Amino acid sequence: MERQMQDRAVRTREMLLRAAAEEFDASGYAGTGLNKIAKRAGLTVGALYFHFESKEGIARAVMMAQPESIEPHLDTQGLQRIVDITRVWSHQLLQDPLLRAGVRLSVEQGSFGVHDITPYLQWRDVMEQCLCDARDSGELLPGIDPGRVAEFVVSACTGVQLYAQLVNGREDLPERTVEMWRLLLPGIATPGTLPRIDLSPHLDRS
Image 1 (cartoon, helix red, strand yellow):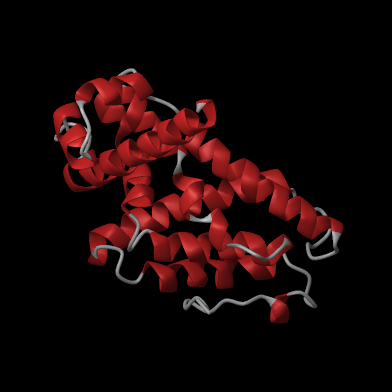
Image 2: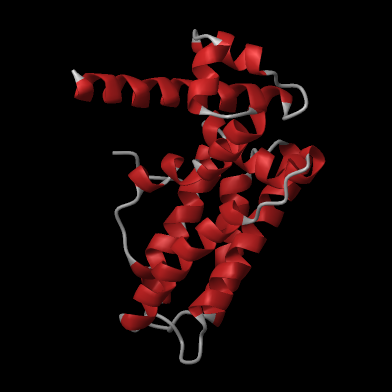
């Protein structure tokens, strides 16, 4: 019985998180109310407060949930993995409201009184680990600092998606993302590694 209650609580929280993401994605933080989130989830506001202490609390949870849209699609390691994180990210931003809302809230958080760089640090840490693995397997040029490169990639992706959003609603974000890597990789990857990196803007969904 206790396990069933725990499972139901997890499902309820996931429903609320998804509903909140859809509302934040469509209307932003200011245009989203707790009543709208609860209604979209088919639950009560009381159920929402049971899982999240406030609208800010659920917004933070949406921001922190971004990797959930990407990590299940990854099966590579090292330098290819960090490239694939951004390739999957560029596609998921076009179709997953949870990721879109997380990105939107992370960028706009100052407008609702939050200054939390944790979502960016989360991505930096994930990417730094990929680059450390790449260094250990001989994929990086001597002297490359994984931490500095990871921080740059997070910053670059943030800028690329903002620019693409203004230009064409992110329609060509996958192409812009791989172009970023075409420019960056020769400066960090060993010559023998470069030809092995998949830089197609299209994902193999098979």
